Amino acid sequence: MAKTIVYSSQTCPWCRVAKDFLMENNIEFESKDVGADLVARNELMQKSGQLGIPVLDIDGTIIVGFNQQAIKEALDI
Image 1 (cartoon, helix red, strand yellow):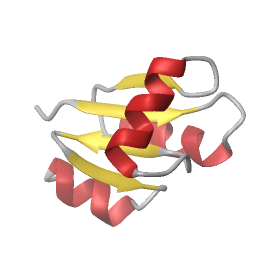
Image 2 (tube, one colour; image 1 turned 30 degrees about the vertical axis):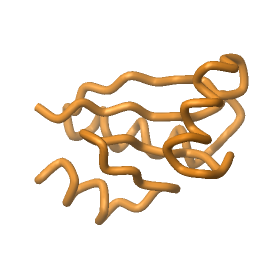
Image 3 (tube, one colour; image 1 turned 135 degrees about the vertical axis):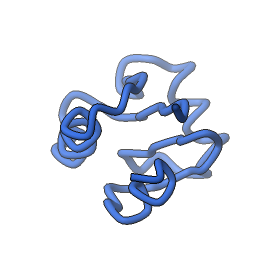
Image 4 (cartoon, helix red, strand yellow; image 1 turned 180 degrees about the vertical axis):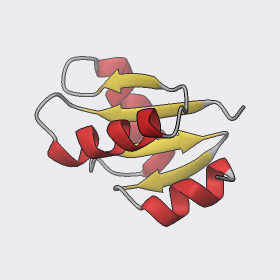
């Protein structure tokens, strides 16, 4: 199974949509709160070059925003 990390914040509605989508498809993921975790925020900047969220890292494939089609392709679902 692909290693999946979701960079998000507690106040981001699209972050919740992304996490719900992963849960509905039984995809395990690690959630990193960039609003509370400076290390996670720095990781986000290094990986995506921006602070926009959600950002998904699926085995090194970086997806900015909730792009359902790109997520499905990266996860092969």
